[in-house]
Image 1 (cartoon, one colour):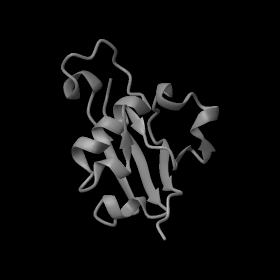
Image 2: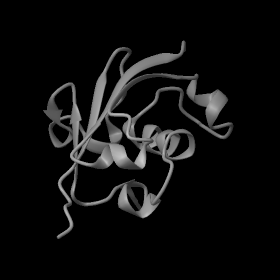
Image 3: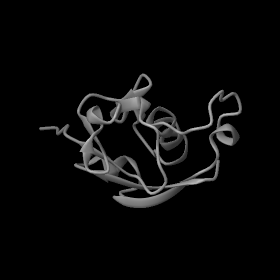
Image 4: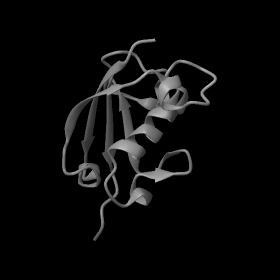
Length: 108
């Protein structure tokens, strides 16, 4: 499998955890090159979240990650659709997908 190009967007304050960058295109390596113990070859959002944490997240991991997923209060859109309609963590990433993470958490 070739590297995947993914448009990645952050909003609602989530971008503050990622050097205040709201939009970027990332290129994911073949899955088995990133996760040497990977038994499958296709990227899912589950692995993508780990890749984001390892490569892009700059601070306060607990505000983005909870367990093996995003924390409650982070809305995830896959090509402008709620990820719940796409299979959530098991959604298989496709080349040129647009994945958006929007924080709905606000302090006061």
